[in-house]
Length: 379
Image 1: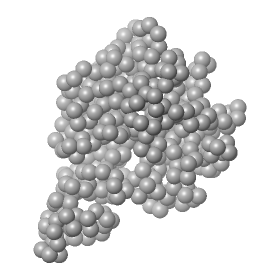
Image 2 (image 1 turned 135 degrees about the vertical axis):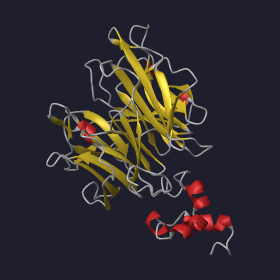
Image 3 (image 1 turned 90 degrees about the vertical axis):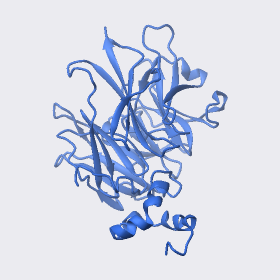
Image 4 (image 1 turned 120 degrees about the horizontal axis):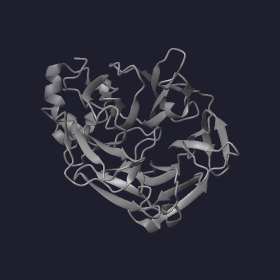
């Protein structure tokens, strides 16, 4: 077929073929048909991603398993998965932290190791991620997983804040891992003079080639200032995006940044809600980088219990959220109605107690051939 069709037409056909169907080709056929396709499409974008497909992770306590599943974002969510997933690699004796999903690769961290898992191929690449500090030394770690839009390479950036006299020191040490070279290196440009904050449940806010976090000035350095800090994955530099003036000076912002319809949004993240401020509003930046375009969409009103964390926006306009110390809910912001999804998830900590907030992680899923030709830990 490739002898009669231009490469452009062949690519347009192959990008619409499911990964499992492509893998039916023999190795020789794959080398002829798919080499250029793999480089073009599966190190590329979400252009052909089905936005109705959501990858969903939760823990269960009955047999200490971590559950992964693919769901349609419809009325059946989260009870009728279209596909249940099981990692090929046993990650560790403890539950791991999901950093994010990009181009079909799920990035996860468990203590001193990082894992890059392709659920479509059930392949995993593992790398050491030692902090460089003694095990007893207090260190705050922030992570971001994204794609270099020029080379199409996947990168994991890590920031380490050391602690002195009960406060974290700026700037942090910044290192970056490149999947194609399977190596870590220190970032040459200076780290930010802010303390970055990272949500444990919300999907990553990666857009315009950059990863985004909410950040604040260190305590004791004058008046409080909150910003969005972005890291450009191609040029490997940090830059600031201002928040609305009514949020920029809040001493305890308790919000995180996510994407809504391709725009930066601020949503509540009251995991550690201090009495001084409880976050319940949702904001959107209609024009990227333009502070005047910040618009408040609505306040979340679910009664006295309050919202602990917004996980993600759903395709029907509802929010997937966790009420404080409760289970998973779907919230309609304009009628202010919330529906209990009757789905309990747990995470076990070191003292064997259980709580629910960290157990959920939801992100858009796409099939991918990334890692197809890589030597992984299972090969």
